[in-house]
Image 1 (cartoon, rainbow over the protein chains, first blue to last red):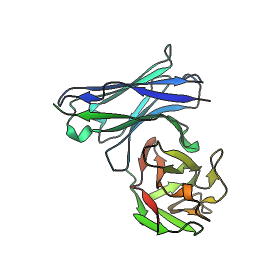
Image 2: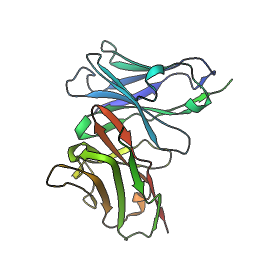
Image 3: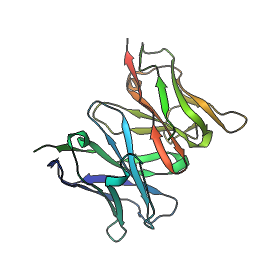
Image 4: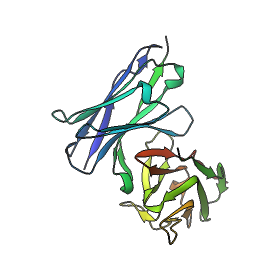
Amino acid sequence: QVQLQESGPGLVKPSQTLSLTCTVSGGSISSGGYYWSWIRQHPGKGLEWIGYIYYSGSTYYNPSLKSRVTISVDTSKNQFSLKLSSVTAADTAVYYCARDLHALGIEPWGQGTLVTVSS
Amino acid sequence: EIVLTQSPGTLSLSPGERATLSCRASQSVRSNSLAWYQQKPGQSPRLLIYGASNRASGIPDRFIGSGYSGSGSGTDFTLIISRLEPEDFAVYYCQQYAGSLLTFGGGTKVEIK
């Protein structure tokens, strides 16, 4: 079955760019009908959608983060990535990647990776 | 942006009891765009229900989603856990799609009384 795994630095300095990669295994990221999402969860808080990408490269972002977010896809590596610029302590969160089936829900999810923004 | 408000914030119940969780949208949401997730401490969320009332693969039938109306849309959705099992004590989130944008509710924690 499809599995997702996040990777990237666990510590980022304020004002820098947070960069994470999600590696998809057990299926092709180019399979039609699927979107690939990033979602975050601040410590002890609820879920916040960041954005998603289709394998063709079309992207949709949370309006509240849109000015700082870039999501890209590398079909040759079966990966998609997140870049969040100008980070502050408020961006400290667990970041999840997930397969987004739209009307059929979001599954599976990666295990999540904690990113701390601190000097 | 459609805001989803979940209530109550915390539900204290005993195993075997029935849990009723509410998700109210600030604008009408198409029923086929409403999903529910379960999250246990230290784990990723798990899809329970999609399309307001369809159980995801492997989800027990004690999880019941509702909210479908004759028009296929609405603002009030409910997740019912008919008889709580020990493994059901967790946080539950609703989520919706509208115009390619996605939002989550704030969550309801179901805790052991």
